[in-house]
Length: 308
Ligand SMILES: C[S@@+](CC[C@H](N)C(=O)[O-])C[C@H]1O[C@@H](n2cnc3c(N)ncnc32)[C@H](O)[C@@H]1O
Image (tube, rainbow, N blue to C red; front, side, top):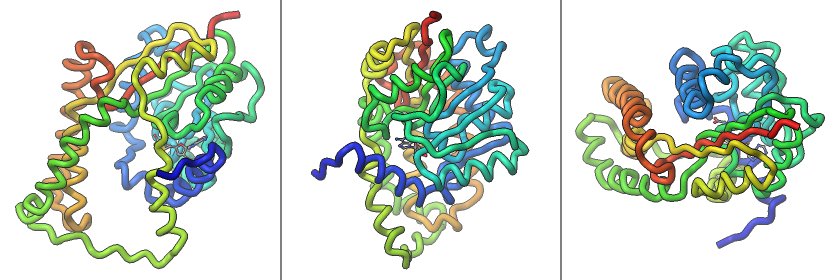
């Protein structure tokens, strides 16, 4: 197996996400309307008390913001007042700026920056947040030190959507099952197979092959809490999120790879979308408060920089 240096990992992440940026929102079904806002607010409500949430956050910094799923939705929902977004990929920053403009959020500032060296003054944010980003960072200790440095005393961090090591292994079961059942499912819904891939751009083909090198960590809950404490944070909590919703989502996503995306029936898409949302509610209400965090697919970390 090829082992990459930290600089190579950052470079691969930049190139991979630059290529992914234009089709990212469509690929992951990212929504900036009511559904998307409700999803992100429900994540924040899992870790912050109603009192903290109702106060909102004055100035927030998102790390690895991608196209803006997490913080543009939180800004629209009124949880964040002033928003600064960063990402190592210029392609992602460009799409985020376009999304912010389209949503009428002109005041959002988006900058290219590496999580390990943030171009911001000490103690200049009330909240540092991220979604599905920590698992890409080669030096987590440096990154957490940076999050701590740019936060004001009493400020908070929130990282969601981080892969859980055990949850990720369990998710292989629905993925593999759907891989076997895919051809039967395709015939059942009457869709043709996907058209052959034709991508004449050699850089693009090359960047697809980088996929295996961008996801460099999966976490146990205690890994995340240890890193936060080591950087000086207190009030550290790690929660697990999404179990049934995730199995259902991966199962359907892998089934769908067997058909021409343009020909998957709308009825099936509606079933997959609404089924996913319904199971997210079951997870949130019935399973997440009762089962241990390591069992879930995603981990959510929150912590506070102690008051001076
Ligand atoms: C899986 S995407 C998530 C994007 C977005 N947060 C979301 O949830 O849709 C990970 C993002 O992290 C960014 N990233 C990877 N390495 C980074 C680094 N060292 N510093 C800052 N951002 C990084 C990538 O460019 C990419 O946009």
